[in-house]
Amino acid sequence: MKRQGKKSLAWNRARLQLKREFFNKQIISCEICGSTYGLSFAHRVKRRFITDDVEMFKVALICVKDHEAIERLPHDEMFYRINEIIENRDSKAAALAFQ
Image 1: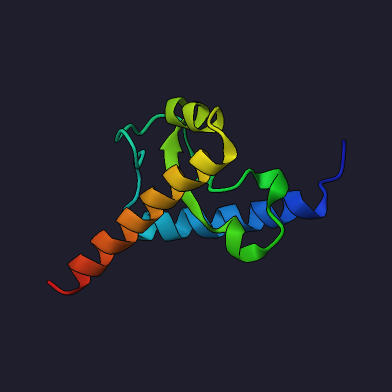
Image 2 (image 1 turned 90 degrees about the vertical axis):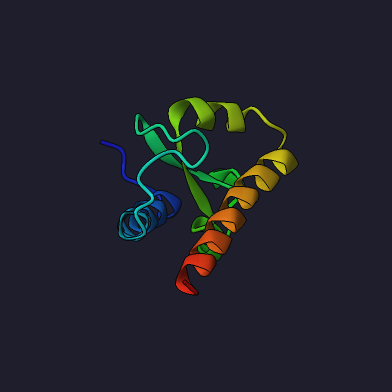
């Protein structure tokens, strides 16, 4: 069995933390279409290009169908779309905190 590299080990630790955070925030469906099937985290930047821990946590929870569509976009468009989801989520959370 092949040993995991540093990046894979770092992602596995990050993913566990992200799962807890998203569950606690009740983000349990696709942030694009609302599906609950085949959910995974989509990064703003392709994982092979991530070089720091901060970027590892800049993700959206999306379904397989939407993840595949986002992965086909040019890198700058992928970054923009995922970042937009993150910003919208953060602004909704901030609004709820003031209610």
